[in-house]
Image (cartoon, rainbow, N blue to C red):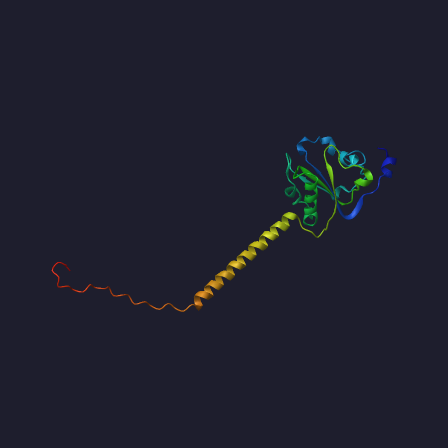
Length: 196
């Protein structure tokens, strides 16, 4: 691609959007040259998707070094993922993948494959662009907060049950002492055949 070609490419920068790519190929099988940058600071991934420029500080990747893992396990640690993570999980499953090896997230960027007509290269597939919120927490943090909230509710419910049981015991009438029964003694008989 010449410099005049790159000038014809649109700028995909868009505040509040995150563009996502995923791979199902084991990360350790992808050649190093895929990640090497050229003189313009673009790696093969960017060139393959006709991306002429992007802010490297806005890129985040996550995945497993070898093999694949559940999409949720990979996306839940990504920045701000409580806001967009479920949408990405749903979209990747719709693409036919329950597991991926790694993902690329490019924040403040809205890649439009309808313009470039490029949906995938040899290593990654474009998932989509999603709204994100910088005030959002990660899915992992959200899960932890929900677990803590559920535990707090469980403890409060148990305390309420304990208080109700103690109040019921206190309100119950005191048990009356029961006099022991005197043993029944058989009447004495004058019959010589019966021995007492």
